[in-house]
Amino acid sequence: MDGSTGTAEDAALALFHRTAETVPAYRAFLRERGIEASEIRAIEDFRRLPLTTKDNYHRRYPLAELCRDGRMESCDMIAVSSGSTGEPTFWPRSLADERPVAARFEQVFCESFRADARRTLAVVCFALGTWVGGLYSVSCCRALAAKGHPITTIGPGNNKEEILRVVPELGPQFEQVVLLGYPPFLKDVIDTGLPRGVDWSRYRIKLVMAGEVFSEEWRTLVGARAGMDDPCRDSASLYGTADAGVLGNETPLSVAIRRFLAARPEAAEELFGEPRLPTLVQYDPYSRFFEERDGTLLFSGAGGIPLIRYHIADEGGLISYHDMTAFCARHGFEPPADPPAERRRAPFAYVFGRSHFTVSFFGANVYPENVTVGLEQPEVSGSVTGKFVLEVKEDADSNPYLAVAVELAPGVPADSALRERVATSILAQLRRLNSEFAHYVPERSQMPRVTLLPAGDPEYFPVGVKHRYTR
Image (cartoon, rainbow, N blue to C red):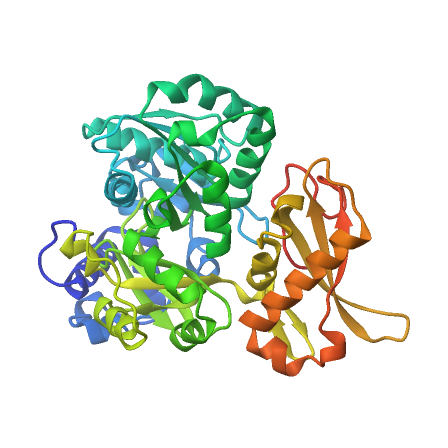
């Protein structure tokens, strides 16, 4: 894939030996565990290697020793991630390390958006600064332009007013405008622009997203508001980490399959083993060699810090191209056959995120993804932003109840009729999508207690802070 020869397993073995030879920290990691690199000859040997993690590898050795030849100066940039703990982690990288990531951007821009043939304005709406998303995206978009694609990049970052200024001013000079950012933020930009008279359809908007799982109802809703009419080709989500850049991306094929499964929760649960819909991407196993272990993902890949069997703790799994298409056929769905044949044979990875973002209610795992779909139904979606906080609380008699604080759209007043519509919509989707909830929770306790709060509420929805959907 991407022009590689040999097997993906061969590529993973070669990466292991290069890393063991050139990276001082990984040599020490193996030595401390009594492992001789020369004895790792077959993929079966490789699969028995100990996992690396942020704690047992990245944080244990000096930063320079994690780099090739122990030289951090061989990298020209450093990205920062804070993860769920808030403790910053530094990830050096070089321009050469971004080529595999740029290939994922190129697949989205050219195969989905036809940016190889259309004058395209890429508006990077990820936060700019030391964090990985913004500058990484700017760099990859410029790399595509350097290859000859007619793509021009502007980086307003997550400054909503600046985005709403540059798109109407520059958008008419291009054939399409691509907004790159986190899904809730892009929705907020689009929703804010509409009452100001921004005609998004005029700019042939496309979306590149990362960082959060969203529903297909969300894709349909935002697509309608932005004037997008081809759900499989007008938006794509990237699965990435600061640790290794973009690991996989949605394709027209994966989006078509995901939309089919979104309407059939029983089939989705059969395939993914969970009553929630994950992000579904395709990936290049030569560039990022994925493995599945106990329902979580690990990968190996080159980078400023080469990583071998790195455990990122994301819940998810892998499905081969053959198994995915066979599953679709058994359920009466024939995916579109128009993407390039070699790309359509790429394997799939699905990613839920991390389990600590669920709440347990009467023994049922309640996922934010289920609540999200309830807020995206047409009877309530125009009145709320899509942000919420899910909690389990107790009443005066110590009986538990499901509490959902919901952020109102700007200018929308709270009233009992709207609160009832929101609660009823959330309950309907919980029952439809989550069989545990439907069967474990007594019917008298199923109705969530909804609190409607103004946009930007300082306790639940503070402005400028990464939102958490559970407490």
